[in-house]
Length: 382
Image (cartoon, rainbow, N blue to C red):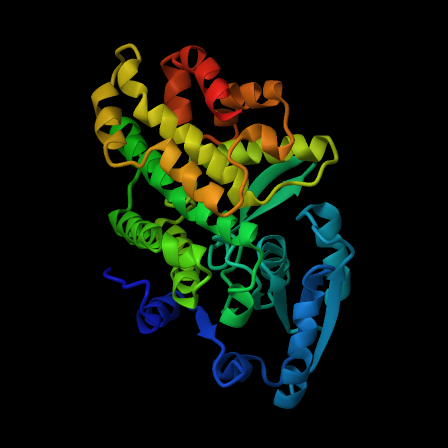
């Protein structure tokens, strides 16, 4: 599947193959989307931060003759937990379409609630900050633990580059971090296929790798806030969701770096603290995973060591990734996101237990290598 992620027609064609209308605003409106929702009652899902973007759409909906109502989560940074889901469900009432106005949590909320109530959903993207726009899964916080559930894929992703290019720099950096994480996620999937005979979907992996490489090459334009650069990033984020759908799971997009992020999220929840952006935590986890790959040649011999060394040759260095994140004003040390050194140490020894999935973290524990590596990781990245 050859896709030029800088080509709108290629992205549109790919999106339609997955049943998604990925529509850029044209002549001030979204004609395909409005054909989908005309005659339906639309419920906007917003939070206190994104309500302003929804208000910008009200006149457009009125002009198109589409009925709508609004539910605003009573928070600037809601979490997708039982209370948020219950409160949203209570406000759905007679809605026939759910439109999230936001990015991570609100997009996931619309997909999750829509799946369970059999109501189609879409999203008006307000930042190129994460890769869940087109994925078929939703991470939900239940009793303090993060659990990933299947969910419907958004039927519409509405893209307005006047909004996306104006997103806070750190949110764009979080999206870049989430894309660069695919280097290690794909490597984790590959080593699991070679060492544990896990099913590997070449088409999904190739689609994801092409998007990552193209996005990485476009970093200067993204940093400059150019529409072409932000478009490359947004399209890579969309493709990440499609790669997951092709694979039938999150393997093309999520490995040890995501397990570390999820581990830290649960720590923030236990302490009642605000959770840093997903892509920031994932970016830091990517640096650790890259360190583990790049230094495996220094470790004692174990079954499959040469496979890991060969895989590491295809990866950037931890410093490469951290240098990019630094340019987006993202934290590049774990201490900067408000966790203790002990929590980071525990993460190194426990995050591989988050999911029954073979990754570079799991390999280090399987071969009793983490005790040797942990202190150096802490000294470098805490």
